[in-house]
Amino acid sequence: MMMFTRKRILAASCAGLLVGAASLAWSPAVWGQGALPALQVQESQPRAMDRSLEGKQKGVLTKTRDGTVWIDRTAYPLASDAAIQGRSGRTFRIQELKWDDVEYRVDYWLGTEFTDKQIIQMIIYLPE
Image (cartoon, rainbow, N blue to C red; front, side, top):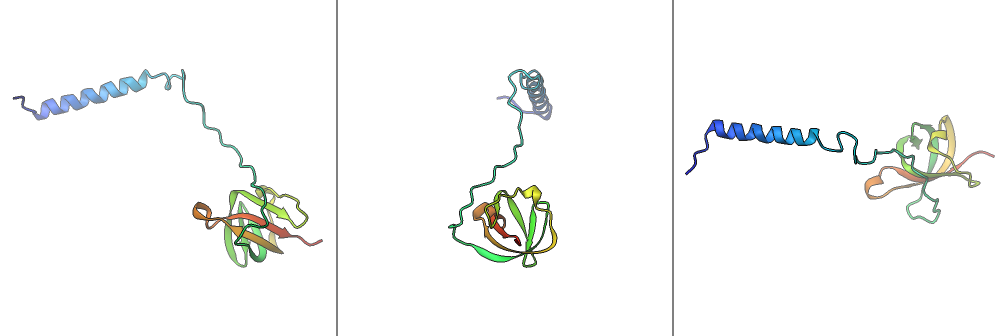
């Protein structure tokens, strides 16, 4: 029967760590051979506007900044793919919304599940 002493357990642990580190150091991914493709961050394409979607809410937009809108004194983040249109159908990108001290009537829809606190689409009634 083999006795496991502290020295043997420590030696086995160190050997295991060295083998693992060596295999990582010589792996093709570390040296750029056969590496996984680089992650690319892409800007989300806006979703299509669906005015028949249930859950429409109405309010007054007073401010927009950095992907957040203030409607009736409540701040809502915009979903990264939020559909934003003017009454005429003009599409707005989130980056275009930089307004302060305005009063525009809006219809907006909050998402469900993972986006339940985010606006997924909004219609802004700009003055004519």
